[in-house]
Amino acid sequence: MGGSNSTGRGKGASPPAMTPVEEVDISAVRYKSPTLQAPHLTGFSLRAFLWLMESSLLGPLITSVLKSQNNMPQMLQQTLIPERPMYYPEYPPQDPEPGVVLVEEDRHPVERVHEALQYLPQYDPSLRWTTEEKPPFLYWKIRDFAHAYRSGITTPSIVAEHVIAGVQEWNNKKPPMPMLIYFDADDLRKQAEDSTKRFEQGNPISILDGVFVAIKDDIDCFPYPTKGATTFFDQVHTVKKDAVCVARLRKCGVIFIGKANMHELGLGVTGNNPNYGTARNPHSIDRYTGGSSSGPASLVSSGLCSVAIGTDGGGSVRIPSALCGIVGFKTTYGRTDMTGVLCDSGTVEVASPLVSSVEDAMLVYSAIAGSRPMDKLTLRPSPLCVPNLLSPDNSNILGSVKIGKYTEWFHDVSDREISITCEDALNLLCSAFGCQIEEIILPELEEMRTAHVVSIGSESFTDLNPHYKAGRRSEFTLDTRTSLALFGSFTATDYVASQSIRRRIMHYHMEAFKKVDVIATPTTGITAPKIPPSALKSGESDYVVSAYLMRFIIAANLLGLPAITVPVGHDKQGLPIGLQLIGRPWGEASLLRVASAVEELCLKKRNRPSTFYDILKA
Image: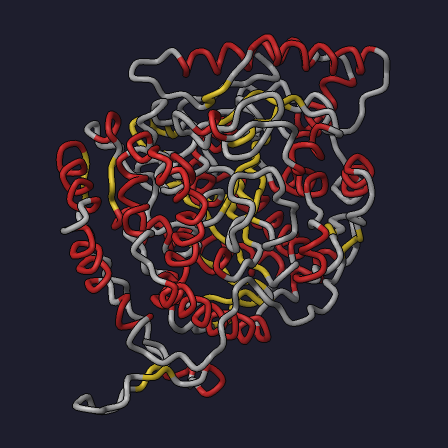
Protein backbone atom coordinates (compact mmCIF):
# COMPACT_ATOMS: atom_id res chain seq x y z
CA MET A 1 0.00 0.00 0.00
CA GLY A 2 1.15 3.54 -0.72
CA GLY A 3 1.04 4.65 2.88
CA SER A 4 0.59 1.71 5.27
CA ASN A 5 2.74 0.65 8.12
CA SER A 6 2.14 -2.50 10.12
CA THR A 7 3.37 -3.56 13.48
CA GLY A 8 4.30 -7.10 14.50
CA ARG A 9 1.44 -9.59 14.33
CA GLY A 10 0.76 -11.84 17.25
CA LYS A 11 -1.67 -12.20 20.08
CA GLY A 12 -3.03 -8.76 20.85
CA ALA A 13 -0.84 -7.11 18.17
CA SER A 14 -2.09 -3.85 16.62
CA PRO A 15 -3.65 -4.16 13.16
CA PRO A 16 -1.80 -2.58 10.22
CA ALA A 17 -2.62 1.13 9.84
CA MET A 18 -2.30 3.51 6.94
CA THR A 19 -0.08 6.53 7.54
CA PRO A 20 -2.24 9.68 7.80
CA VAL A 21 -2.45 11.02 4.27
CA GLU A 22 -0.75 14.37 5.05
CA GLU A 23 2.28 12.49 6.42
CA VAL A 24 2.83 10.14 3.44
CA ASP A 25 6.23 10.73 1.79
CA ILE A 26 5.03 10.78 -1.82
CA SER A 27 8.58 10.82 -3.20
CA ALA A 28 9.22 7.41 -1.60
CA VAL A 29 6.20 5.77 -3.29
CA ARG A 30 7.09 3.06 -5.83
CA TYR A 31 4.74 2.16 -8.68
CA LYS A 32 3.43 -1.38 -8.59
CA SER A 33 1.76 -2.85 -11.67
CA PRO A 34 -1.59 -4.39 -10.68
CA THR A 35 -1.93 -8.16 -10.77
CA LEU A 36 -5.64 -8.82 -11.05
CA GLN A 37 -6.70 -12.42 -10.68
CA ALA A 38 -9.97 -13.61 -12.19
CA PRO A 39 -10.93 -16.34 -14.68
CA HIS A 40 -11.92 -15.55 -18.30
CA LEU A 41 -15.32 -17.14 -18.86
CA THR A 42 -17.74 -17.53 -21.78
CA GLY A 43 -20.46 -20.02 -22.68
CA PHE A 44 -20.68 -23.11 -20.47
CA SER A 45 -17.82 -22.07 -18.16
CA LEU A 46 -19.57 -18.73 -17.44
CA ARG A 47 -22.87 -20.52 -16.75
CA ALA A 48 -21.18 -23.00 -14.40
CA PHE A 49 -19.23 -20.27 -12.58
CA LEU A 50 -22.41 -18.23 -12.14
CA TRP A 51 -24.25 -21.28 -10.74
CA LEU A 52 -21.50 -21.57 -8.12
CA MET A 53 -21.49 -17.79 -7.40
CA GLU A 54 -25.27 -17.79 -6.85
CA SER A 55 -25.39 -20.95 -4.76
CA SER A 56 -26.12 -20.13 -1.11
CA LEU A 57 -23.47 -22.59 0.10
CA LEU A 58 -20.57 -22.10 -2.32
CA GLY A 59 -21.22 -18.50 -3.41
CA PRO A 60 -19.87 -16.82 -0.27
CA LEU A 61 -16.75 -19.02 -0.44
CA ILE A 62 -16.01 -18.13 -4.08
CA THR A 63 -16.56 -14.36 -3.65
CA SER A 64 -14.39 -14.53 -0.53
CA VAL A 65 -11.54 -16.23 -2.47
CA LEU A 66 -11.86 -13.76 -5.36
CA LYS A 67 -11.71 -10.80 -2.97
CA SER A 68 -8.78 -12.27 -1.01
CA GLN A 69 -6.80 -12.89 -4.21
CA ASN A 70 -7.23 -9.20 -4.99
CA ASN A 71 -6.27 -8.03 -1.50
CA MET A 72 -9.67 -6.55 -0.67
CA PRO A 73 -10.22 -7.86 2.89
CA GLN A 74 -6.72 -6.80 3.93
CA MET A 75 -7.25 -3.33 2.47
CA LEU A 76 -10.84 -2.66 3.61
CA GLN A 77 -11.37 -4.76 6.74
CA GLN A 78 -8.02 -5.45 8.38
CA THR A 79 -6.32 -2.04 8.03
CA LEU A 80 -6.99 1.08 10.06
CA ILE A 81 -7.68 4.05 7.76
CA PRO A 82 -7.32 7.31 9.72
CA GLU A 83 -9.27 9.55 7.30
CA ARG A 84 -12.99 10.10 7.70
CA PRO A 85 -15.17 8.93 4.80
CA MET A 86 -15.93 11.15 1.77
CA TYR A 87 -19.29 9.94 0.47
CA TYR A 88 -19.29 12.07 -2.67
CA PRO A 89 -16.58 14.30 -4.17
CA GLU A 90 -15.68 17.32 -2.01
CA TYR A 91 -13.41 19.95 -3.53
CA PRO A 92 -11.49 22.91 -2.17
CA PRO A 93 -12.54 26.24 -3.79
CA GLN A 94 -10.95 26.57 -7.26
CA ASP A 95 -9.20 29.61 -8.73
CA PRO A 96 -10.90 31.17 -11.77
CA GLU A 97 -9.64 29.68 -15.06
CA PRO A 98 -7.68 31.95 -17.43
CA GLY A 99 -9.08 32.92 -20.86
CA VAL A 100 -12.61 31.61 -20.36
CA VAL A 101 -16.07 33.01 -20.93
CA LEU A 102 -18.97 32.68 -18.53
CA VAL A 103 -21.95 30.77 -19.97
CA GLU A 104 -24.50 31.30 -17.22
CA GLU A 105 -26.21 28.00 -16.49
CA ASP A 106 -29.54 29.59 -15.59
CA ARG A 107 -29.97 30.83 -19.17
CA HIS A 108 -31.92 28.93 -21.85
CA PRO A 109 -29.82 26.17 -23.52
CA VAL A 110 -30.17 27.93 -26.92
CA GLU A 111 -28.65 31.13 -25.51
CA ARG A 112 -25.81 29.20 -23.91
CA VAL A 113 -24.97 27.37 -27.14
CA HIS A 114 -25.10 30.67 -29.05
CA GLU A 115 -22.74 32.19 -26.49
CA ALA A 116 -20.24 29.29 -26.81
CA LEU A 117 -20.40 29.56 -30.60
CA GLN A 118 -19.04 33.12 -30.47
CA TYR A 119 -15.70 31.87 -29.09
CA LEU A 120 -14.95 29.19 -31.68
CA PRO A 121 -12.57 29.93 -34.58
CA GLN A 122 -14.28 31.46 -37.64
CA TYR A 123 -16.12 28.84 -39.74
CA ASP A 124 -14.67 28.66 -43.26
CA PRO A 125 -16.87 26.60 -45.62
CA SER A 126 -14.14 26.53 -48.30
CA LEU A 127 -11.93 24.46 -45.99
CA ARG A 128 -14.70 21.99 -45.25
CA TRP A 129 -16.49 21.73 -48.59
CA THR A 130 -13.51 21.10 -50.86
CA THR A 131 -13.60 19.28 -54.18
CA GLU A 132 -10.47 17.32 -53.27
CA GLU A 133 -10.55 13.58 -53.87
CA LYS A 134 -9.49 12.98 -50.27
CA PRO A 135 -10.71 15.79 -48.01
CA PRO A 136 -8.31 16.79 -45.21
CA PHE A 137 -10.71 15.77 -42.42
CA LEU A 138 -12.77 12.80 -41.38
CA TYR A 139 -15.97 13.86 -39.74
CA TRP A 140 -18.61 16.47 -40.43
CA LYS A 141 -19.04 18.77 -37.44
CA ILE A 142 -22.18 20.44 -36.08
CA ARG A 143 -21.29 23.65 -37.93
CA ASP A 144 -21.01 21.72 -41.23
CA PHE A 145 -24.60 20.51 -40.87
CA ALA A 146 -25.70 24.03 -39.96
CA HIS A 147 -23.96 25.43 -43.06
CA ALA A 148 -25.37 22.71 -45.34
CA TYR A 149 -28.94 23.34 -44.17
CA ARG A 150 -28.68 27.13 -44.27
CA SER A 151 -27.11 27.25 -47.72
CA GLY A 152 -29.52 24.74 -49.25
CA ILE A 153 -26.90 22.03 -49.93
CA THR A 154 -29.22 19.51 -48.26
CA THR A 155 -32.07 19.28 -45.74
CA PRO A 156 -32.56 17.39 -42.47
CA SER A 157 -35.16 15.24 -44.26
CA ILE A 158 -32.69 14.16 -46.94
CA VAL A 159 -30.00 13.38 -44.35
CA ALA A 160 -32.54 11.44 -42.25
CA GLU A 161 -33.03 8.95 -45.10
CA HIS A 162 -29.27 8.22 -45.15
CA VAL A 163 -29.32 7.74 -41.36
CA ILE A 164 -32.30 5.36 -41.60
CA ALA A 165 -30.61 3.30 -44.33
CA GLY A 166 -27.40 3.01 -42.29
CA VAL A 167 -29.16 2.04 -39.05
CA GLN A 168 -31.29 -0.60 -40.80
CA GLU A 169 -28.24 -2.06 -42.52
CA TRP A 170 -26.65 -2.71 -39.10
CA ASN A 171 -29.87 -3.99 -37.52
CA ASN A 172 -30.29 -6.57 -40.32
CA LYS A 173 -26.78 -8.06 -40.17
CA LYS A 174 -26.27 -11.69 -39.16
CA PRO A 175 -25.39 -12.14 -36.33
CA PRO A 176 -27.20 -8.96 -35.19
CA MET A 177 -24.93 -5.99 -34.35
CA PRO A 178 -27.40 -3.19 -33.66
CA MET A 179 -26.08 0.25 -32.79
CA LEU A 180 -29.63 1.22 -31.75
CA ILE A 181 -31.96 -1.01 -29.78
CA TYR A 182 -35.00 1.25 -30.10
CA PHE A 183 -35.50 2.86 -33.49
CA ASP A 184 -38.61 4.34 -35.11
CA ALA A 185 -37.99 5.46 -38.68
CA ASP A 186 -41.36 7.26 -38.93
CA ASP A 187 -40.68 9.28 -35.78
CA LEU A 188 -37.24 10.20 -37.13
CA ARG A 189 -38.77 11.35 -40.45
CA LYS A 190 -41.33 13.45 -38.55
CA GLN A 191 -38.63 15.21 -36.46
CA ALA A 192 -36.55 15.81 -39.62
CA GLU A 193 -39.58 17.19 -41.48
CA ASP A 194 -40.27 19.66 -38.65
CA SER A 195 -36.64 20.78 -38.71
CA THR A 196 -36.65 21.09 -42.52
CA LYS A 197 -39.74 23.34 -42.29
CA ARG A 198 -37.98 25.59 -39.77
CA PHE A 199 -35.08 26.04 -42.20
CA GLU A 200 -37.47 26.68 -45.13
CA GLN A 201 -39.18 29.38 -43.07
CA GLY A 202 -35.81 30.88 -42.14
CA ASN A 203 -36.12 30.34 -38.38
CA PRO A 204 -33.97 27.44 -37.17
CA ILE A 205 -33.91 27.23 -33.36
CA SER A 206 -30.13 27.08 -32.90
CA ILE A 207 -26.88 25.86 -34.45
CA LEU A 208 -27.94 22.38 -33.21
CA ASP A 209 -31.21 22.41 -35.19
CA GLY A 210 -31.32 19.36 -37.48
CA VAL A 211 -28.26 17.72 -35.90
CA PHE A 212 -28.75 13.97 -35.35
CA VAL A 213 -28.26 12.73 -31.78
CA ALA A 214 -28.37 9.24 -30.25
CA ILE A 215 -29.27 8.67 -26.59
CA LYS A 216 -27.84 5.76 -24.59
CA ASP A 217 -30.52 3.36 -23.40
CA ASP A 218 -30.13 4.27 -19.71
CA ILE A 219 -31.28 7.88 -20.28
CA ASP A 220 -34.98 8.75 -20.67
CA CYS A 221 -35.96 10.15 -24.08
CA PHE A 222 -39.75 10.43 -24.38
CA PRO A 223 -41.67 8.62 -25.91
CA TYR A 224 -39.06 5.87 -26.37
CA PRO A 225 -38.79 3.14 -23.71
CA THR A 226 -35.72 2.98 -21.41
CA LYS A 227 -34.50 -0.58 -20.92
CA GLY A 228 -30.85 -0.17 -19.93
CA ALA A 229 -30.38 -2.77 -22.73
CA THR A 230 -32.13 -5.41 -20.59
CA THR A 231 -35.08 -7.41 -21.91
CA PHE A 232 -37.50 -6.24 -19.21
CA PHE A 233 -36.69 -2.87 -17.63
CA ASP A 234 -39.30 -0.97 -19.65
CA GLN A 235 -41.96 -3.09 -17.87
CA VAL A 236 -40.93 -1.68 -14.48
CA HIS A 237 -39.79 1.81 -15.55
CA THR A 238 -42.27 4.08 -17.34
CA VAL A 239 -40.84 7.00 -19.30
CA LYS A 240 -43.09 10.00 -18.68
CA LYS A 241 -40.76 12.76 -19.90
CA ASP A 242 -37.24 13.46 -21.15
CA ALA A 243 -34.25 13.29 -18.84
CA VAL A 244 -33.09 16.86 -18.09
CA CYS A 245 -30.04 16.62 -20.41
CA VAL A 246 -32.27 15.32 -23.23
CA ALA A 247 -34.87 18.06 -22.66
CA ARG A 248 -32.12 20.69 -22.95
CA LEU A 249 -31.00 19.28 -26.30
CA ARG A 250 -34.60 19.04 -27.53
CA LYS A 251 -35.03 22.76 -26.80
CA CYS A 252 -32.14 23.36 -29.24
CA GLY A 253 -33.90 21.55 -32.11
CA VAL A 254 -31.82 18.37 -32.35
CA ILE A 255 -33.22 15.23 -34.00
CA PHE A 256 -33.16 12.11 -31.79
CA ILE A 257 -32.44 8.96 -33.78
CA GLY A 258 -33.33 6.46 -31.05
CA LYS A 259 -31.98 4.59 -28.02
CA ALA A 260 -28.41 3.35 -28.40
CA ASN A 261 -27.16 -0.12 -27.52
CA MET A 262 -25.04 -0.58 -24.38
CA HIS A 263 -23.53 -3.14 -22.06
CA GLU A 264 -26.52 -4.33 -20.00
CA LEU A 265 -27.23 -1.76 -17.22
CA GLY A 266 -23.77 -0.28 -17.80
CA LEU A 267 -22.15 -3.08 -15.76
CA GLY A 268 -19.28 -3.79 -18.14
CA VAL A 269 -16.71 -2.02 -20.27
CA THR A 270 -16.58 -4.17 -23.43
CA GLY A 271 -20.07 -3.41 -24.77
CA ASN A 272 -21.02 -7.08 -25.04
CA ASN A 273 -24.81 -7.56 -25.15
CA PRO A 274 -26.36 -10.99 -25.80
CA ASN A 275 -29.91 -9.57 -25.44
CA TYR A 276 -29.89 -7.55 -28.67
CA GLY A 277 -26.53 -8.31 -30.26
CA THR A 278 -23.19 -6.63 -29.62
CA ALA A 279 -22.42 -3.28 -31.29
CA ARG A 280 -19.23 -3.46 -33.37
CA ASN A 281 -16.19 -1.25 -33.68
CA PRO A 282 -16.38 0.60 -37.03
CA HIS A 283 -12.57 0.34 -37.33
CA SER A 284 -12.72 -3.47 -37.20
CA ILE A 285 -16.08 -5.20 -36.88
CA ASP A 286 -14.67 -8.31 -35.21
CA ARG A 287 -13.68 -6.15 -32.22
CA TYR A 288 -15.48 -4.57 -29.30
CA THR A 289 -16.40 -0.88 -29.24
CA GLY A 290 -15.67 -0.73 -25.51
CA GLY A 291 -18.44 0.11 -23.10
CA SER A 292 -20.70 0.56 -21.57
CA SER A 293 -21.68 3.28 -24.11
CA SER A 294 -21.09 0.90 -27.04
CA GLY A 295 -23.90 1.99 -29.38
CA PRO A 296 -23.21 5.73 -28.92
CA ALA A 297 -19.51 5.30 -29.80
CA SER A 298 -20.27 3.05 -32.76
CA LEU A 299 -22.82 5.51 -34.19
CA VAL A 300 -20.56 8.56 -33.92
CA SER A 301 -17.44 6.71 -35.12
CA SER A 302 -19.23 5.34 -38.21
CA GLY A 303 -20.51 8.82 -39.14
CA LEU A 304 -24.21 7.96 -38.65
CA CYS A 305 -24.65 10.81 -36.19
CA SER A 306 -22.46 13.64 -34.92
CA VAL A 307 -23.43 13.48 -31.28
CA ALA A 308 -24.45 10.87 -28.74
CA ILE A 309 -25.12 11.19 -25.03
CA GLY A 310 -23.79 8.41 -22.82
CA THR A 311 -23.12 7.91 -19.12
CA ASP A 312 -19.71 7.49 -17.48
CA GLY A 313 -19.45 5.83 -14.04
CA GLY A 314 -16.36 3.73 -14.74
CA GLY A 315 -15.00 5.07 -18.04
CA SER A 316 -18.19 4.23 -19.95
CA VAL A 317 -17.94 7.29 -22.24
CA ARG A 318 -14.14 7.57 -22.47
CA ILE A 319 -13.30 3.90 -23.07
CA PRO A 320 -15.55 3.37 -26.12
CA SER A 321 -14.63 6.82 -27.47
CA ALA A 322 -10.93 5.94 -27.31
CA LEU A 323 -11.42 2.48 -28.85
CA CYS A 324 -13.57 3.89 -31.68
CA GLY A 325 -11.35 6.92 -32.45
CA ILE A 326 -13.66 9.76 -31.34
CA VAL A 327 -13.85 12.36 -28.55
CA GLY A 328 -15.48 11.45 -25.21
CA PHE A 329 -15.92 14.23 -22.65
CA LYS A 330 -16.70 13.32 -19.02
CA THR A 331 -17.65 16.42 -17.05
CA THR A 332 -17.20 17.06 -13.32
CA TYR A 333 -19.53 15.06 -11.06
CA GLY A 334 -22.68 17.13 -10.54
CA ARG A 335 -22.01 19.51 -13.45
CA THR A 336 -25.00 18.12 -15.36
CA ASP A 337 -28.41 17.38 -13.85
CA MET A 338 -28.83 13.57 -13.83
CA THR A 339 -32.61 13.54 -13.31
CA GLY A 340 -34.13 10.99 -15.70
CA VAL A 341 -31.01 8.82 -15.93
CA LEU A 342 -31.25 5.26 -14.55
CA CYS A 343 -28.18 5.68 -12.33
CA ASP A 344 -29.05 9.17 -11.10
CA SER A 345 -28.42 8.51 -7.40
CA GLY A 346 -24.83 7.22 -7.54
CA THR A 347 -21.69 9.14 -6.57
CA VAL A 348 -19.47 8.35 -9.59
CA GLU A 349 -21.69 8.78 -12.65
CA VAL A 350 -22.27 11.63 -15.12
CA ALA A 351 -24.14 11.99 -18.42
CA SER A 352 -21.71 13.20 -21.07
CA PRO A 353 -21.24 13.67 -24.82
CA LEU A 354 -19.52 11.38 -27.33
CA VAL A 355 -18.71 13.45 -30.40
CA SER A 356 -16.41 13.45 -33.41
CA SER A 357 -14.58 16.67 -32.47
CA VAL A 358 -13.64 18.80 -29.45
CA GLU A 359 -15.51 21.75 -30.96
CA ASP A 360 -18.72 19.71 -30.91
CA ALA A 361 -18.01 18.63 -27.32
CA MET A 362 -17.90 22.32 -26.37
CA LEU A 363 -21.23 23.09 -28.07
CA VAL A 364 -23.07 20.06 -26.66
CA TYR A 365 -21.61 20.67 -23.20
CA SER A 366 -22.95 24.24 -23.33
CA ALA A 367 -26.42 22.86 -24.08
CA ILE A 368 -26.65 20.05 -21.51
CA ALA A 369 -24.65 21.37 -18.51
CA GLY A 370 -26.31 22.80 -15.42
CA SER A 371 -26.38 21.26 -11.96
CA ARG A 372 -29.51 20.17 -10.14
CA PRO A 373 -30.53 22.47 -7.25
CA MET A 374 -29.48 19.93 -4.60
CA ASP A 375 -25.98 19.61 -6.11
CA LYS A 376 -25.56 23.38 -6.18
CA LEU A 377 -25.98 23.37 -2.42
CA THR A 378 -23.73 20.40 -1.63
CA LEU A 379 -21.09 20.55 -4.39
CA ARG A 380 -20.88 24.34 -4.86
CA PRO A 381 -19.88 24.16 -8.55
CA SER A 382 -17.68 26.86 -10.06
CA PRO A 383 -19.48 28.93 -12.74
CA LEU A 384 -20.12 27.24 -16.09
CA CYS A 385 -17.49 28.43 -18.62
CA VAL A 386 -16.12 27.68 -22.09
CA PRO A 387 -12.65 28.55 -23.41
CA ASN A 388 -12.29 31.67 -25.54
CA LEU A 389 -10.46 30.07 -28.47
CA LEU A 390 -10.42 33.41 -30.32
CA SER A 391 -8.53 35.23 -27.57
CA PRO A 392 -5.17 36.67 -28.66
CA ASP A 393 -3.91 35.18 -25.38
CA ASN A 394 -4.88 31.63 -26.36
CA SER A 395 -1.35 30.57 -27.37
CA ASN A 396 0.19 32.15 -24.26
CA ILE A 397 -2.34 30.39 -22.02
CA LEU A 398 -1.52 27.07 -23.70
CA GLY A 399 2.19 27.84 -23.33
CA SER A 400 1.82 28.22 -19.58
CA VAL A 401 0.03 24.87 -19.13
CA LYS A 402 1.84 22.31 -17.00
CA ILE A 403 1.01 18.69 -17.82
CA GLY A 404 1.39 16.07 -15.10
CA LYS A 405 2.70 12.65 -16.10
CA TYR A 406 3.32 9.68 -13.81
CA THR A 407 5.77 8.00 -16.19
CA GLU A 408 5.78 4.45 -14.79
CA TRP A 409 1.99 4.33 -14.71
CA PHE A 410 1.75 6.03 -18.13
CA HIS A 411 3.77 3.21 -19.73
CA ASP A 412 2.00 0.34 -17.92
CA VAL A 413 0.08 -0.71 -21.03
CA SER A 414 -0.29 -3.97 -22.96
CA ASP A 415 1.90 -2.62 -25.78
CA ARG A 416 4.29 0.34 -25.52
CA GLU A 417 3.03 1.49 -28.91
CA ILE A 418 -0.03 2.87 -27.06
CA SER A 419 1.90 4.96 -24.53
CA ILE A 420 4.52 6.09 -27.08
CA THR A 421 1.76 7.34 -29.42
CA CYS A 422 0.30 9.30 -26.47
CA GLU A 423 3.75 10.61 -25.53
CA ASP A 424 4.29 11.78 -29.12
CA ALA A 425 1.05 13.78 -28.93
CA LEU A 426 2.20 15.47 -25.70
CA ASN A 427 5.60 16.25 -27.25
CA LEU A 428 3.86 17.83 -30.25
CA LEU A 429 1.84 20.00 -27.85
CA CYS A 430 4.96 21.06 -25.97
CA SER A 431 6.93 21.91 -29.11
CA ALA A 432 3.99 23.81 -30.66
CA PHE A 433 3.12 25.92 -27.60
CA GLY A 434 5.98 25.58 -25.14
CA CYS A 435 4.02 23.89 -22.36
CA GLN A 436 5.92 21.73 -19.88
CA ILE A 437 5.58 18.14 -18.77
CA GLU A 438 6.09 17.68 -15.01
CA GLU A 439 6.74 14.31 -13.39
CA ILE A 440 4.13 13.51 -10.71
CA ILE A 441 3.49 10.53 -8.42
CA LEU A 442 -0.02 9.35 -7.59
CA PRO A 443 0.07 6.93 -4.64
CA GLU A 444 -2.37 4.14 -3.78
CA LEU A 445 -3.66 3.43 -7.29
CA GLU A 446 -4.58 -0.11 -6.28
CA GLU A 447 -6.56 1.22 -3.31
CA MET A 448 -8.26 3.68 -5.69
CA ARG A 449 -9.37 0.84 -7.99
CA THR A 450 -10.74 -1.13 -5.04
CA ALA A 451 -12.60 1.88 -3.60
CA HIS A 452 -14.14 2.53 -7.01
CA VAL A 453 -15.37 -1.02 -7.62
CA VAL A 454 -16.88 -1.16 -4.12
CA SER A 455 -18.54 2.26 -4.59
CA ILE A 456 -20.02 1.72 -8.07
CA GLY A 457 -20.77 -1.94 -7.25
CA SER A 458 -22.63 -1.19 -4.01
CA GLU A 459 -24.55 1.69 -5.60
CA SER A 460 -25.56 -0.44 -8.62
CA PHE A 461 -26.53 -3.37 -6.40
CA THR A 462 -28.71 -1.10 -4.24
CA ASP A 463 -30.57 0.05 -7.37
CA LEU A 464 -31.01 -3.44 -8.81
CA ASN A 465 -31.50 -5.60 -5.72
CA PRO A 466 -35.29 -4.93 -5.48
CA HIS A 467 -35.70 -6.34 -9.04
CA TYR A 468 -33.59 -9.34 -8.03
CA LYS A 469 -35.79 -9.90 -4.99
CA ALA A 470 -38.93 -9.52 -7.13
CA GLY A 471 -37.89 -12.62 -9.11
CA ARG A 472 -36.25 -10.93 -12.09
CA ARG A 473 -32.82 -12.45 -11.51
CA SER A 474 -32.96 -14.91 -14.41
CA GLU A 475 -33.81 -12.05 -16.82
CA PHE A 476 -30.39 -10.38 -16.41
CA THR A 477 -27.48 -11.53 -18.60
CA LEU A 478 -24.97 -13.99 -17.14
CA ASP A 479 -22.17 -11.42 -16.82
CA THR A 480 -24.49 -8.90 -15.12
CA ARG A 481 -25.48 -11.62 -12.64
CA THR A 482 -21.81 -12.50 -12.05
CA SER A 483 -21.05 -8.85 -11.30
CA LEU A 484 -24.09 -8.51 -9.04
CA ALA A 485 -23.13 -11.67 -7.11
CA LEU A 486 -19.77 -10.05 -6.36
CA PHE A 487 -21.28 -6.61 -5.62
CA GLY A 488 -23.85 -8.16 -3.27
CA SER A 489 -21.01 -9.57 -1.17
CA PHE A 490 -19.64 -6.12 -0.33
CA THR A 491 -20.38 -5.13 3.28
CA ALA A 492 -21.14 -1.82 4.94
CA THR A 493 -17.56 -1.93 6.28
CA ASP A 494 -16.20 -2.30 2.73
CA TYR A 495 -18.28 0.67 1.55
CA VAL A 496 -17.33 3.01 4.41
CA ALA A 497 -13.63 2.06 4.19
CA SER A 498 -13.76 2.76 0.45
CA GLN A 499 -15.08 6.26 1.14
CA SER A 500 -12.15 6.87 3.53
CA ILE A 501 -9.84 5.78 0.71
CA ARG A 502 -11.69 8.22 -1.58
CA ARG A 503 -10.63 11.04 0.76
CA ARG A 504 -6.99 9.90 0.61
CA ILE A 505 -6.98 9.66 -3.19
CA MET A 506 -8.60 13.11 -3.44
CA HIS A 507 -5.77 14.52 -1.29
CA TYR A 508 -3.08 13.05 -3.56
CA HIS A 509 -4.74 14.44 -6.69
CA MET A 510 -5.31 17.89 -5.19
CA GLU A 511 -1.60 17.93 -4.22
CA ALA A 512 -0.69 17.05 -7.83
CA PHE A 513 -2.93 19.88 -9.11
CA LYS A 514 -0.90 22.36 -7.03
CA LYS A 515 1.98 21.58 -9.43
CA VAL A 516 0.17 20.87 -12.72
CA ASP A 517 -2.92 22.00 -14.64
CA VAL A 518 -3.87 18.70 -16.29
CA ILE A 519 -2.86 15.07 -15.80
CA ALA A 520 -2.20 13.09 -18.99
CA THR A 521 -2.45 9.32 -19.46
CA PRO A 522 -3.32 6.94 -22.29
CA THR A 523 -7.11 6.52 -22.09
CA THR A 524 -6.93 2.71 -22.10
CA GLY A 525 -4.18 0.16 -21.52
CA ILE A 526 -5.15 -1.84 -24.63
CA THR A 527 -6.71 -1.05 -28.01
CA ALA A 528 -10.03 -2.62 -29.04
CA PRO A 529 -10.11 -6.30 -27.94
CA LYS A 530 -11.32 -9.06 -30.26
CA ILE A 531 -14.82 -10.40 -29.61
CA PRO A 532 -14.66 -14.15 -28.78
CA PRO A 533 -17.35 -15.77 -31.00
CA SER A 534 -18.47 -17.82 -27.96
CA ALA A 535 -19.23 -14.54 -26.12
CA LEU A 536 -21.87 -13.33 -28.59
CA LYS A 537 -24.61 -15.71 -27.49
CA SER A 538 -24.20 -15.77 -23.72
CA GLY A 539 -21.78 -12.94 -22.91
CA GLU A 540 -18.44 -13.16 -21.16
CA SER A 541 -16.68 -12.27 -17.93
CA ASP A 542 -13.10 -11.10 -18.42
CA TYR A 543 -11.93 -8.95 -15.52
CA VAL A 544 -8.34 -8.91 -16.86
CA VAL A 545 -9.36 -7.23 -20.15
CA SER A 546 -11.67 -4.92 -18.18
CA ALA A 547 -8.79 -3.96 -15.88
CA TYR A 548 -6.64 -2.99 -18.90
CA LEU A 549 -9.52 -0.97 -20.35
CA MET A 550 -10.10 0.78 -16.99
CA ARG A 551 -6.45 1.21 -15.95
CA PHE A 552 -6.35 5.02 -16.32
CA ILE A 553 -9.95 6.10 -16.05
CA ILE A 554 -10.94 5.55 -12.43
CA ALA A 555 -9.77 8.81 -10.79
CA ALA A 556 -12.23 10.83 -12.88
CA ASN A 557 -15.10 8.71 -11.53
CA LEU A 558 -14.13 8.11 -7.90
CA LEU A 559 -13.06 11.76 -7.53
CA GLY A 560 -15.59 13.19 -10.00
CA LEU A 561 -12.88 15.05 -11.98
CA PRO A 562 -13.50 16.21 -15.57
CA ALA A 563 -11.65 14.19 -18.21
CA ILE A 564 -11.59 14.00 -22.00
CA THR A 565 -10.22 11.48 -24.48
CA VAL A 566 -8.84 12.72 -27.79
CA PRO A 567 -7.82 10.43 -30.68
CA VAL A 568 -4.04 10.72 -31.30
CA GLY A 569 -3.20 7.87 -33.67
CA HIS A 570 -3.50 4.14 -34.37
CA ASP A 571 -1.61 0.97 -33.51
CA LYS A 572 -0.02 -1.41 -36.06
CA GLN A 573 -3.40 -3.08 -36.60
CA GLY A 574 -5.01 0.26 -37.42
CA LEU A 575 -6.93 0.44 -34.14
CA PRO A 576 -7.43 3.90 -32.58
CA ILE A 577 -5.46 5.13 -29.56
CA GLY A 578 -6.84 7.85 -27.25
CA LEU A 579 -4.97 10.30 -25.01
CA GLN A 580 -6.78 11.16 -21.77
CA LEU A 581 -6.51 14.57 -20.12
CA ILE A 582 -7.82 14.89 -16.55
CA GLY A 583 -8.59 18.38 -15.26
CA ARG A 584 -9.09 20.18 -11.99
CA PRO A 585 -12.58 20.10 -10.43
CA TRP A 586 -14.96 22.26 -12.54
CA GLY A 587 -12.06 22.93 -14.96
CA GLU A 588 -13.90 21.83 -18.11
CA ALA A 589 -13.08 25.01 -20.06
CA SER A 590 -9.30 24.66 -19.57
CA LEU A 591 -9.53 20.97 -20.45
CA LEU A 592 -11.40 21.76 -23.69
CA ARG A 593 -8.71 24.31 -24.63
CA VAL A 594 -5.86 21.80 -24.25
CA ALA A 595 -7.87 19.01 -25.92
CA SER A 596 -8.65 21.27 -28.88
CA ALA A 597 -4.94 21.96 -29.37
CA VAL A 598 -4.03 18.24 -29.14
CA GLU A 599 -6.80 17.34 -31.61
CA GLU A 600 -5.59 19.91 -34.13
CA LEU A 601 -1.97 18.69 -33.90
CA CYS A 602 -2.96 15.01 -34.35
CA LEU A 603 -5.65 15.49 -37.02
CA LYS A 604 -3.58 13.94 -39.80
CA LYS A 605 -3.00 10.83 -37.66
CA ARG A 606 -6.69 9.94 -37.61
CA ASN A 607 -7.87 7.30 -40.09
CA ARG A 608 -11.34 6.88 -41.44
CA PRO A 609 -13.01 3.73 -40.05
CA SER A 610 -13.43 0.79 -42.43
CA THR A 611 -17.19 1.17 -41.90
CA PHE A 612 -18.14 4.80 -42.53
CA TYR A 613 -21.23 6.66 -43.72
CA ASP A 614 -20.94 10.10 -45.27
CA ILE A 615 -24.48 11.13 -44.38
CA LEU A 616 -24.04 14.77 -45.40
CA LYS A 617 -22.61 14.23 -48.89
CA ALA A 618 -24.28 10.90 -49.57
